[in-house]
Length: 100
Image (cartoon, rainbow, N blue to C red; front, side, top):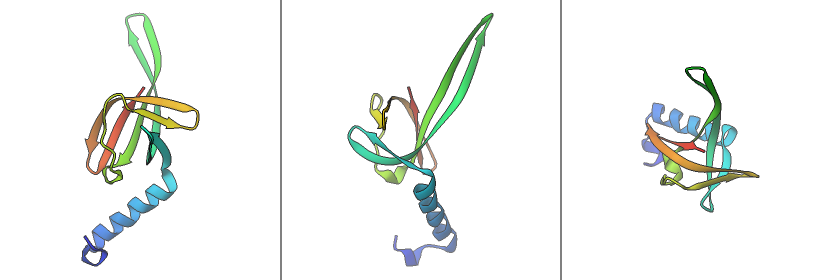
């Protein structure tokens, strides 16, 4: 779709997506390819009877337009950090990877 055929609303969304990509996203390498994404780490505290388990839930979110096709077991790297894709979901125009 050329820029001239976008509605003002679609144009504003495209501009917002560009700002998000430029400001909030970092580059991650997945199986040798570079993708811009946002990492989220959330502490997890699970209790079962008298046992407590602490952990962290990690997700990596990117735009579907990045061209990445999710696959379980893919290796995700950024600097010295390395993760494995253990699950994924799609939400509107986003891909959300569950990392281990």
